[in-house]
Length: 597
Image 1 (cartoon, rainbow, N blue to C red):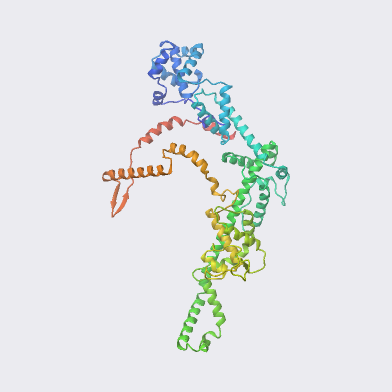
Image 2 (spheres, rainbow, N blue to C red):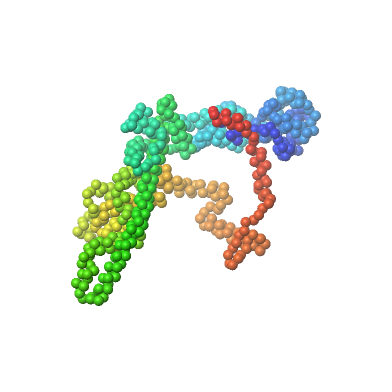
């Protein structure tokens, strides 16, 4: 149910300011002449006719005298200087004259009488259209009210309007339930209904679907991925597009989450299947998002830990660095003294030559704050989880560049090979043979670690298996964050292009959009209009600059100060009475009762 104050349905306030009475309920000279044409000025009918007229102008419907606040009646009585008593006015509202005046008021205002059959059908039609994209009953009622006012129909009682809108919403929802349940084939129906009869630690049922999976941690990451694999098997039975407006989609998700096992079983079969389908898709999307976050956060953690390990390595090996510099210095001195004698290096290199060379290579690997080698041993601990997570994401590219996805497919096929190097050419001995994959997307910081070559111009026949895998995963995490890669059916990482309108819709809706915003349609015309506006703005700024106390130029820089305003602007003054008129007093007890219902 919806309370009347939650809608735009017009009501009469019980308390009025004199300004409200003067502006809204004072008859105009035209209205006075209209009343005189249909009754004597001294009669109660004259006052009654004007009271009905002003109330209908305000509410869009006729109301009995008991529904009209005394303050309004007294104001109109004083405004027209009527001497009719309250008893006489009550008698008028019970007479046939009141009914005759209703007809002439409708004609005067060009107001169409409400008819339960004809107008009710129209309201139901308008409510059906609104209910296709709206779920809140108040919103559907408000749309119907807009149509009634636009078409100049007399408003029905609120209860009638509410009943029609509720029926329309129920019919639209039932259509959506049928649409969703019909998506399932016989196998899908069995799988979905099976969720209502499964319980146990080794299987998934309704409660597992209804409650979101626990936040993935290093300990439960494999259990989380297993849950995602189960959802993926259910998702495979659903269509690509459920065909639901966002408001309906969100409402059905909330309804499904609120139902326990007994409640979901009591629903009609079409609604039960529909809610379960929507929840499966939602939980699948949420779990995909979390799985993508697993990949991104795991690689970020590996990255941070590797940088920290590099810092510790550099601090702990400072003495080695000093020794290397000392050895190099001694070597250079000996070479300068006896450049022709190889044996002259023996005092420096003979004893620790191999160890020094190993230390030099190790140090050079980390030179320039290169922490990537430290990532490899950390990655090996998370390798299995990363592969499982990315495999089930079903990644797709938002661009025409598919090299990263092809690289992932390559390492996925080769992940169980027991080899340190992976061959990326069809024939390793023939340098002119085709590459199995393109690795030119590999960035400079990864190149030597992946290929073992310092130059990107070198011929590459093999790549280091684990280093290349880590490089691919790192790039996948980056492109997921930027939107170059997307996850179908995900919420956070889905294809951003799906949120854009088509060029056909753009061309169709552009004129109306520009008309509403006061813009000029057309590329050239819009650009020219914008240039004119900017030029006019510049000219205006130049003209007022000398007298503007808040704008000045100091040392060649424009300084704009904040103006101090002690008085409210004209716009604020105009809005204040409108807000006061529309924001009616609300009984808190009434709000609590409605919420509890």
